[in-house]
Amino acid sequence: MRQELTVSVVIPCYNAARTIGSCLAAVLAQTYPIREVIVVDDAGTDESGAIAARTPCTVMRRARNGGVSAARNTGVRASGGDVVFFVDADVALAPDAVANAVAILGRDPGVACVHGSYDLEPLIDDGPVEHYQLIHAAAWRGRLQGEVRTAVFALAAIRRDVLLETGGFDENLRDCEDVEFSGRLPARHRIVLTGTVTGRHDDEATLTGLLAEQWRRSVPLAGMALAARRRGAAGLERAHPPLGVVAAGMVVATLPLGLLGAPWLAVPAAFAVLFGFADPRLPGFVRRARGPAFVPYFMAVHFLVTVVLAAGLAVGVASAVLRGQTWNMTERSAREVGR
Image (cartoon, rainbow, N blue to C red; front, side):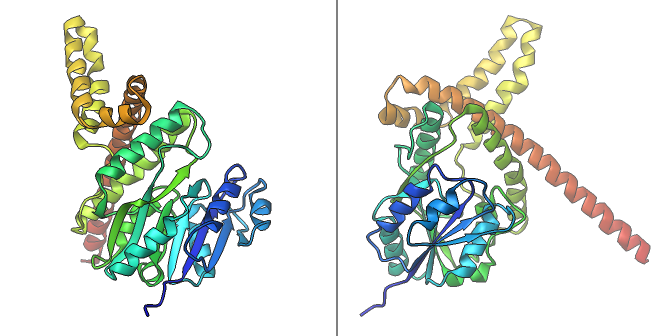
């Protein structure tokens, strides 16, 4: 009889008193037996740790805030399961999420990591900005289901030996840490994105918060993509079609042409139309998810998010190129001194 894989659940937590109770209740209600549940309180200032301590789990408190990478690594070091299942403190897993992830890992030894997606219904309903994020996430993750190149560790299972071999998460990163980790994963270890591992997520509720979050993630993402290309690695999965990103950026870049006269506004208008057609299946997905009245709002927010993404990528590319030029100049100078 095949031995079942043992599972450790690791939950990084920072000021998540609003959701940690629901997160833990969902973990403890899993249909697959859990060896241990480890909550890492990343030096938070609210009652998250106390709430977690009232449940049958291990609570570890870090002395200082180190970010999600440091919290996950702390939990891994304290865990002992064959599989580490990461779930963020603002996610409540579906009852069969762990079982479905382990089933995929058990069927194929070549699969190292399995990650999933959020439900369309939020954990706590905070309004239309949150609905936008959940619908967009469901749309692009649904489109990419199967074998992928990057994992999102908000709800993901990974084999312990692979995690240790790869070296854990980069504790210098507070954003895009999962992209960076995936880029170091040896090619023989495959990643699967599945619709059978799901959870309800409490996402950002305000437009300013959403745009700020998009900016933080976009700037380092460009450098990671360039680094992956230099290593000869495959490209990253795209939540936004490149044509849409370019079109959104060009709308903003060409708006000043309107100062030359009204006819020139046709240029940014043309790019706006191109943006609308860059992902032709998206409006239909939105309509089915929340009805036709939500489509204009969704597309307006989506445009703003994509503009911020385009700007962040441009800044990230420029910064990465500048760093590369500085490194090359330093290297040349060192060689000249050594002559």
